[in-house]
Image (tube, rainbow, N blue to C red; front, top):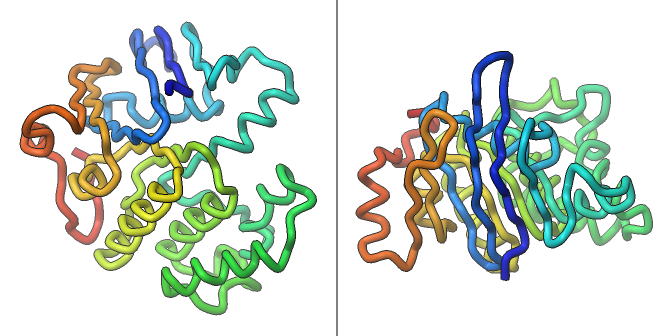
Length: 248
């Protein structure tokens, strides 16, 4: 079942067409990886789909709702089900870690059960090996920890769709491996992913489709059902785990 439809999207930065006539759909139970060069427009596309950067032309529909042309109440409801993870973490510096993690929950689910959510948070903290951080501010924890904490903040929302920009960016080798298993487990729980990444390991773990972008356009699409799916994907120079994910 199609739940998200991107139709004829254009997005311009000053005089440069960053996105040019982008169209595709997302289906329940099928996660998509978007790969391409730094100038391909892939991260901008993710922001357009996430409701952060309105397109100059075109539409983005979540089920039958236009995410840019609906009532405030409808858009708020959509944002309960779609979470966006920036590549650099994006925690609020004036809040302690616990407050950062609980902020979206408090906004979207004001009647949440505190003890249940904190048990879930602590399980994820143990999994990622992050200890004694809940009372600290973001400036007091490592960049790697800040990135991993944003995965926890997203997971406790139990969203329908996660939009993730470069999930392995600036992570060490062991943290990359933990994130990949983390994503695999969330997919088994029914969460859908749209992930911007040039990582072959991310594709193998959760990808049902690979979209290749170049110069603001979709230039190739591969599906898991295609013969030699992973071998064909290799031709696009996707990277293996190396300690830090690089842009190609």
